[in-house]
Image (cartoon, rainbow, N blue to C red; front, side, top):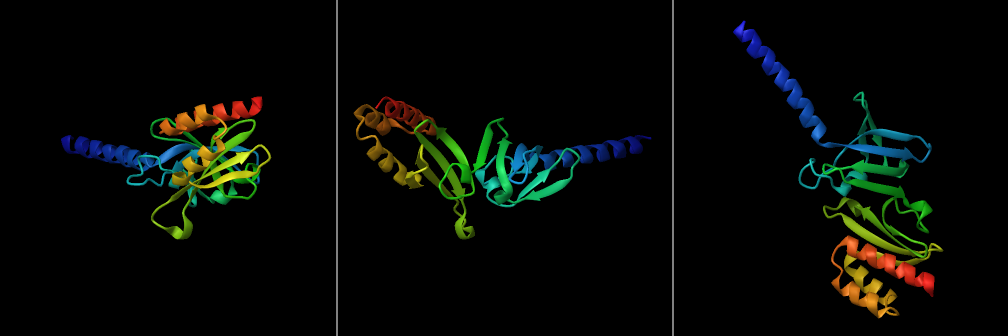
Length: 197
């Protein structure tokens, strides 16, 4: 009887912990495919940088493994997705949109950093030629879909400084900008100043 109980609890523990381990690399997701307007709810396999337990944007760069509530798995190409929202391990939501509606040329899935009346800032994540280092590219687009800037973040500050040269107060704030939130606030202020001019 004692051996039977030990065996039962051992098997029970194995089942519980193996399911928990399998689900740790999956995050809740909602997505819409380009050929449909239905929102699909599932979980997505995370492609982590060092571990699959922490969200990493590479999850949306490659063929995505989705799992529905019944455990059925589907593979989805990023090029087939119109919209996707992933909730990470800290309950932070990461949203990506197809770029065709927002950029002059299709660039895959983009993240909206700021959308205003006159100016927009987007991020594009890429992996050219399957390199180890993934690239983050930024786009500053005006209301007519003209590209004001397209490039990497280290060049971004210089391009943004040129745009702000008519506004010394914003140029000064740009010097102290360090976080994405700081830059979003600068875009918001710049957008409102364009409205007034």
